[in-house]
Length: 506
Image 1 (cartoon, rainbow, N blue to C red):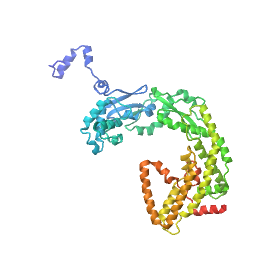
Image 2 (cartoon, rainbow, N blue to C red):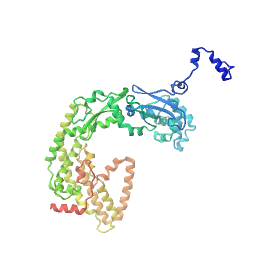
Image 3 (cartoon, rainbow, N blue to C red):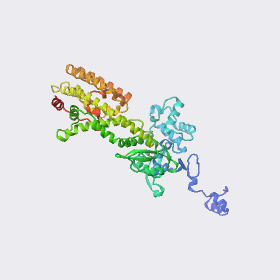
Image 4 (tube, helix red, strand yellow):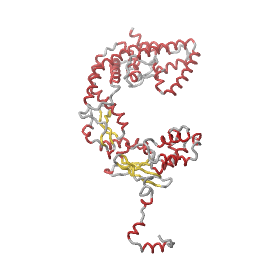
């Protein structure tokens, strides 16, 4: 453009004298001027690759607008295939600003080590011009730790507190074949998956692994065709086939997320094995030699009632619970690798041979525990109002709070040999404590307070496993504990009713 042009009229006159090729060279569209729509393609790419698909990226600089920053167009079938770690990097042009924002979100005591934050943000972008496999918070934490020697963890950043334009905006659309309308728009991937994840999974499965379509109906037996670990999915995104437990049957589905498939498949195989072993389980229930005494004790604990129907239910429920616990044991491990009919048949036959022996082992355990429970329960009633109430209340809480889902559920795959000894040893400990409560209730209360504080510290350090390994194996394990497989909760039984039951057996 000549330097002497200084008015609109002069510009129009000069432009009118240009040839057509020169005029086209001066015409810029909005796409040429905006980042990511033709300029600075490295910093603001137009697309995000996902498998063979290229998902469009759009950029807008308008603080306060719903789509301020970068927006990713996501077709519904690919929603569950998005990688949250990759989304955290946005586009390269945003990385320095996002890193600075994350640094500002650190607690003050840590933040002062990284001042000025924009300088550290730019240094981070120079070190990571392209996204890594980890989330941006993890890489930034390691970068800052190396830079200053002050340890920073990814959880130290307050990512939700970032300005909206520093988080990816997701625009979810129907598949183009269904119209392509916008279903939702959000910067929260988890919220979108919670609302549309199941629908997205069905859409992905409908378009992925078409060779498996014939086996996608209700299954009550293992498919004749082996189930592959991976199939070609929508837009080149791999799909992960897995059996899914649907209650009284299983179905074969293709997941976009491998971890979801790995979690679902063992439960689906378990469902088909239980269907295959139904006759064996029914036979085991009939053959279990449950004594009348044990049936009555179990009924007292489970409170089936006193009518004729309740009495008929006593033994049947006990047998059903024993066999259910045995099934849990023989099917506890090794189901994830079963992907063909031959492996399924071998596992079914092996479980069928073990089932009755496992049920008998649980029956023997059930016969050992009720006596300890029956002996302990009457001693938990105070002879006088307020006498050792704190200690006895605590013991009753332990007894009532340990429901019938413990021992079989935890020991299903490891055997139950140690369980009776543990139960008996803890019963002896509880009896000693009851006796001590009578002699020195105040001293026992103080000891128990110390024990509870120590228990809380142990739980804080080692999690729930420490609690289960301690007081959770006490005498509160009732007959129901020994035989139930995680179905229902224990009910409170009065000492009077239990004593009546025992008296009727003498």
